[in-house]
Length: 437
Image (cartoon, rainbow, N blue to C red; front, side):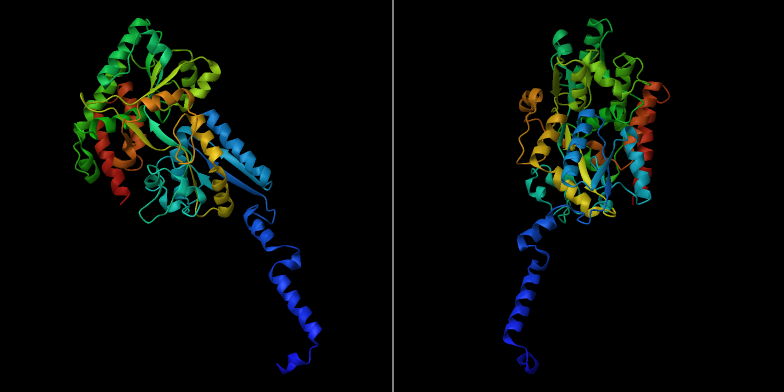
């Protein structure tokens, strides 16, 4: 205090003013407001060039184009950030398994229904992002664990059933079937009345999805229903896999009756939009994400959506659902902060609306009302049909999707019987569960 008394009052006052100004950012010409803006602007204020890898499971070009458009919008605001979008298609799961083993995942990636169970240990917590409070009640538990960790941004929601060519059904007088047997009968009528020009059901043995998807739908319809319910046995490992054989036998029946493409072992999923647009395919066991590509070929093609017909007579129709496309952030990404900012950017309501509309699926956000156009009447018509989680995500261990596809291909290829396929399921479920303990 004695030393301070020797300093002239004016000099002391000036010093205090300078210190105060610097503490408010005045020394650099910034106000407190400017400082806050700087903290929420470009996530890499140093101007460091950042290139983020983003992986998605989508095969639909319209959706891929939307990813790129939003990425371009982000780059306009943050010129130092660019993106490497990757769509591995049927190789996605194998690529991701290899990347998990090496702990070298993309900066942002699609969890395709496995956000918690498969990828949980690799994902950054997103519970503090603004979009979390906007999620629908049905979506929250799918991407959130009991501790409140949020694993991924759901870009849209899945309410999956069968997409069909309405022109074909109208032409041959087919009503939406109530059971799988009714569906097969409808397929036989279409094949007969079209003189074989129309293939009732699209399946491809060369891609990872279409055959496995059929079994995933009907795993629920056959085994998780009010009439017949094996949920507990599937969960605790006591399920008798001979109960799977009737479903495999129905699949073989569809093949034996010529209700699948003649070249089912070689036709590719990429051929699907053209075949659908030309009226050569009636039913497809998937959501309508491929339809925009078909509409480019035939803008007048009419499309319908229906639930999965019951397996057991008298049982309920079902949809399968959960998250569709997601964005999770790799917790060890070198650019984690930028990646988190990108996810926040993608979550804007206008982008969520576009994702729902381009994929023809419901939204995962409360504050978004997409215009689903031609699909609206069908979602309204079937608004009371229950939506069950995807069968494999709940009742099968990770890795069974490949088994579902490969055994299906062997059944139609004649190298495996339905009974043998059930035994393969049993052995692989046990093997994969033992590896994951």
